[in-house]
Image (cartoon, rainbow, N blue to C red; front, top):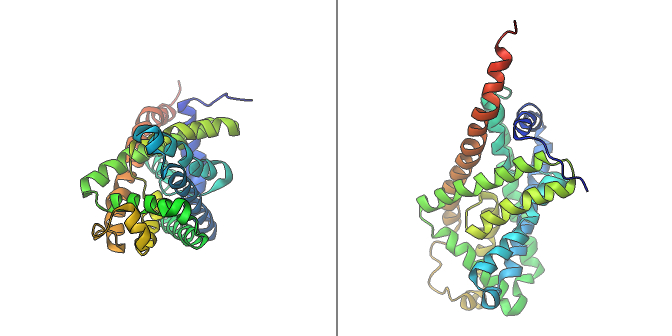
Length: 285
């Protein structure tokens, strides 16, 4: 089993000159399909976390329940990285190539826009499939109640809370992608993804694409009286609306961009790429 990895400087150069540039050159069709996949894959991780943790806190405590939920959620990004998909949050790393003048801002925004809405379509489709599957009725509807509680908590965050949690989340997500690029074998990529993703979910940070699944799933559960009763949320769901979802996604998405494009892309660009480009530009004697 090979665990050899690339150095951080090599990761930065690989992302800037190869991986991120290629992402901006994909056709609209390819970006749409791969973005759709990523929305579904992250949704798989989200629904698995709901299923596994819906009653877990009563047996192992809240902290361990969050830890285990984060561990199983990580399958979503594993699918994105290993199987191949385009995830908006991970694509915030493309800003590296913009800073390095390998990619234009227009190309960056094209990628982000197409991928973001393709992620949304994939997430919502999975919500419909999960609803039609009836699996939310598991354990007397407690799985649906867990989904409802998660969604309701998210739409009741303040703008600042959602923004700050969005920054923290994508700082970790982009580090997961960054480290996955360093790995030369699938096992290494899986380990690189697992720990940062487990950390962000267990900590309660906010991921825009995950919320594209969590909140619509909660909206679906809101219509089920038995689920609302099981969750103890009667008369407490006034913010759980489509408008409430939008008002969550705006600060979370902005926070995700800051976390990925600034705290990872920009600062690593300063450390590893800026000096390298200056050295390359200096004529040798």
